[in-house]
Length: 209
Image (cartoon, rainbow, N blue to C red; front, side):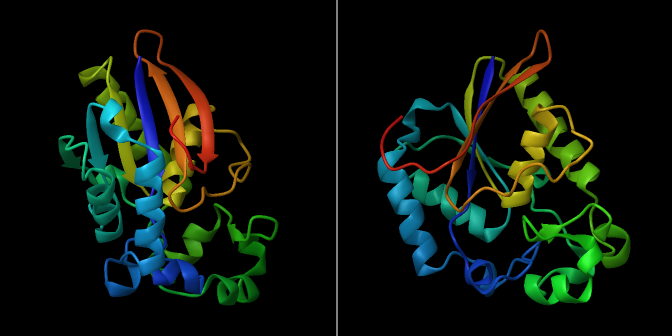
């Protein structure tokens, strides 16, 4: 079995401002001082030296998160575009609250986030496409490393997409909210049976486990 430990990056200024970051890779989406402190706190409570390797989204906020986590463990690191955040198209960089006010039918007001139908209006990436690419990465990685424990540093919607793939792509894709910054989600994939196991989701780490 391959164990995947998905870690969401630390907070950014865009997170704090309630912006749709998407695939923006500029100073406003780099780790803030708060974000760096969050990752350092995670590093102290979640020693990743038990793992075999790290796979990271190639955006700066995830690369910096991985670098802090890997300071002592010195695990081999690779980057994979399939871990990129969902691209919100024309909505990248816009305030979530403004979009909710302008396009109320395209949002779930319980989760304060977009519904799948948003993609046609925003010219953004579909939910299905994100799920497809993350599922492909997990399947490929599990085939190549069938007994490894792997840290994946990624983004809120990307981690949600991994969970949706693991639980069988429910018809209502809004069944879960995005995980918190620097939370950990564990998914196990049994390669021989192609079975997924969601071990835990959105766990805030403050001690070794």
